[in-house]
Image (tube, rainbow, N blue to C red; front, side, top):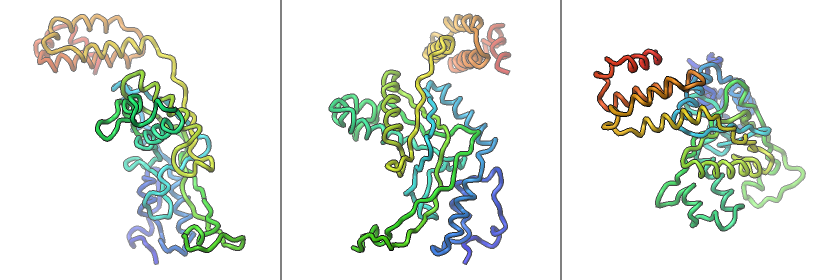
Length: 322
């Protein structure tokens, strides 16, 4: 008996289909004996591309992180990754897919849990739950840690999902019925989705502790792995090293922070000096735009937008933002 409503039986996936929605709602038959429907559902979901819509969404997300001063690094899966395999789903297996975009992702909570477990197990007495370093990074039941772990989203442009299979050889033994495993047990292939690709790992917090956390994550992702089936080699990611700091971008970041730190009473006397620094900035247009946006926002916040509109320097800033 089909599990689809009659009006959906003729619906087929398209380039803009959400893979998560398709996986949850479009299985043709949930009968446990119908292996073909489960296998087809996994294959169909794996073939759905992220598309241009996700690519634009991802670029906006990455820009927001940069504007907020969040440090981002890319991590590439070495093979396959199975995050969320044991979660609830229409199959016996599942995968963590972004609810809005339908792409695989690594929850920030999973990254934090992996880093914390690796620290406790491999970094000695200085990184046990009662120590200051552990509490600063990961927190405890009384307070949150100083480092924020964002969800790791995949970079667009490449295929991210692939059909995979795990095979249970001794079903009765694993059920705990007391039957011993035997050579004549019938294997049971179970289809599931595995992910691959590059992911944007994003952390925020005090600079020194963010760098320390990235070092812990680098070792944890490569040597321990994240998600399910890590003992079989799944979930290993290679985290890129910290990129050299561009002095011009660092200057822009410091300038924006100084502007945002101005008190409303200080704006009238000091904001024009920041405009002069903006005029002499060199580099990409995006960096100059960040500073211009910060100046205009601060002027508005101080309630001086009306009188500033009469000034040539303020008009120049507004013109650059059009």
